Length: 168
Image (cartoon, rainbow, N blue to C red):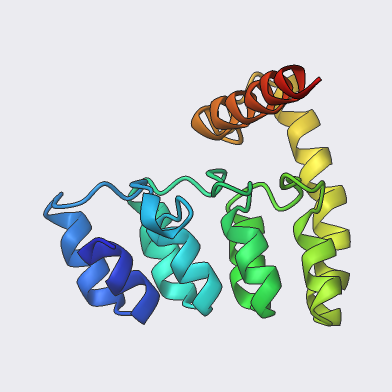
C-alpha cells in the first residue's frame, strides 16, 4: 500500500493534497496486493468525502475498477456513505457501473441495508444515463471506461474458456 493509499484510507486529506501537489504519487495507482484498489477506492470506502474531492481534483478517475469491477461508488454504497455517493454523482462519476457479478452500486447498498443510498442511487442512475446521452449528443467527452479492467476481464474469460476446453 502506497503512502497515498494509506493517507486516503485514514482520511488525512492534508497529506493527500500535499502528496498530490508535489506530484509524488499517481492518484490512479492500483495496489495489486489489495485487489487493485486506488486511493479513491479507499477514501470512498471509509467515507472521507473531502479526500474524495481532493483526489478527483488531482486526476483520480472514479471509473476505475478493482479486480472485481468495483468502482469508488460500489465501496461508498457498501459502507452507506451517502455524502460520498452524492459527490461522485455531482462529478459525473459512473454510479451505475456493473461489477463482475452484474451488481451496480445501488444493489450493493440494498444488500447492506443502506436504504437512503439505494433511493439516491436509483435516482442518480436515471440522471447519469440522461447526462451520458446529452454528452454524446453534444460531443462532450466523459471518463467512464476503465481500459485496464476491461483487458483483465477479457483475459479472465479467455482463461476460463481455455481451461474448460482442456477439461473436456
